[in-house]
Length: 344
Image 1 (cartoon, rainbow, N blue to C red):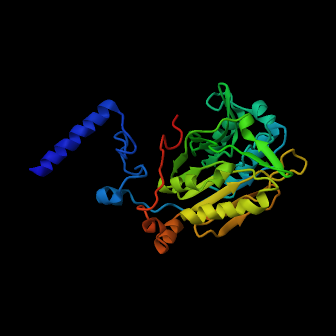
Image 2: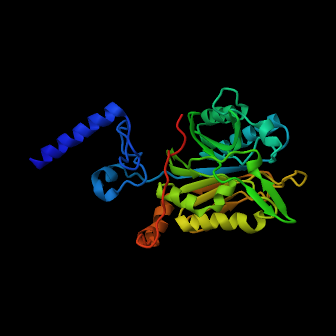
Image 3: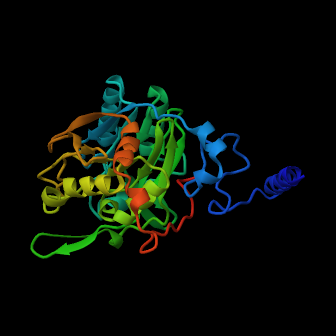
């Protein structure tokens, strides 16, 4: 009958998938190589597969987030030692996901980026290796702020994410480079030395999906909207806003991204160093899905902790169903998907 024909067609298509191992994440939202439905891609329509969706629906487990606001120096070894100490302290206080600042292993300057850059994909990356070893030793996720990454003749501002097993599970290269000129206040042009990344990053964790951006990425609402569309309920932005933009924009932008998308936003800054050529604002912060400030630091070195329950995201979206109320007949957001995250 019709059911038998439908089953036969599915089996045939499954064999084709297995033979070619090629599929489009847009057309076929789940990979035949996966054995569960937990990793179904964004864009998948639950109404078409209610049975599969309900079997995969699991309430996210609450977790403790730690933001390590580090004092960055010109000594890379000292910076690695400082990061190691902070990550261990955070883990000893019960943190499950630990975040470091933007450019935590070097001064934030175009002169420093080429000198401190590391080839992350090689064995010769002391900063990445240290974070990998810490994640494994402490059984925690480490969202490694960012460091300058060298790949052949290009430099990137790159965030590495490590699993509790010490594996590199995501790598985000800063998509929007910090090129600004505010006369009489501040001028900086990352593009003098750095190359922009060409992929957005959503990483799967045992606690849920996390989007990753770096500093200037925070200013672009479309990026956060895409992350929300892909299922992220927390977006983490290691960043180093300055003394001009920090006081007026840093918290405002975090609250805007959180409120627009009804999710958690966390930022992790270096501590302030008045003697540095680039002075960071500090104030690492966690914002909740109702735009409430959950936790925040001042400008000094320290660790910010926040207990996160991602079920709050669903509660806020149920109370105020913005995604259902959007007018797709008047406007839309295009997801120019390449890959989700970084695949080794």
